[in-house]
Image 1 (cartoon, rainbow, N blue to C red):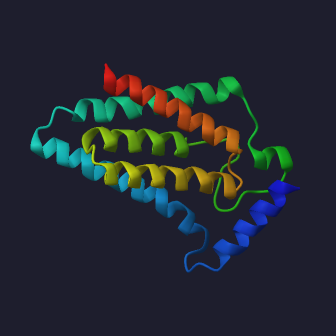
Image 2 (cartoon, rainbow, N blue to C red):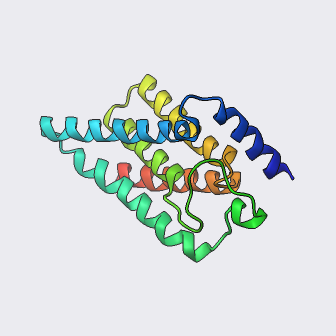
Length: 159
């Protein structure tokens, strides 16, 4: 019941936007663009931190990709039989929240300024929140993805 109300509220809100459900992808695209720009900066300046800035997020993504089928938790839209807001492929996940958190940590590693850290944390939180509000994930999925990415990132950048 709560899932249906939440997704319908999100669906109505998104329908009023100029690009509709495409707007839900904007924070994810922004996060990817910031990451790509940061990697280009590191590459062109010859900064060796590029190695960790590539490897640590890749490890986060790989771990989530391996764990997801092992855990086998149903997505809310499969469990309740109500499609989420926006485009989706049943049973196919892309680890948006885990990737966003890993990218936020990579950017914080490269640019450890409080304002940059705060902006990337906020962007990561927005992406995770949209995954819940659009009916793609349960809040527990998002929190687990955030925690896993934070742990892997802390280990990866501290070693």
